[in-house]
Image (cartoon, rainbow, N blue to C red; front, side, top):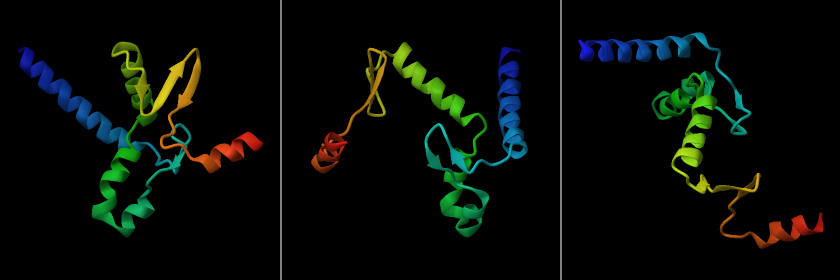
Length: 110
């Protein structure tokens, strides 16, 4: 009985996300990641090469899952670094390696 409940729950979640993916409107830009997302127009140009990008970019509640993954890595696993980003004393620091001397000089001048 337990296996049937788990199987039914899995199928409901699977089809639920599929239906949500169809119902939700595609987004062009991710403010959370600060980048352009793959859209249907790009998918029509080169279907087989862009399909994976489109499905991952337009996944329902994508930003929430990314936030949840980040919280899990920082607060449960206690990783000090996650995606080359450190948080120390309520400051967020991006790891820039190798150091770009020209960019650093421009920053100092500002």
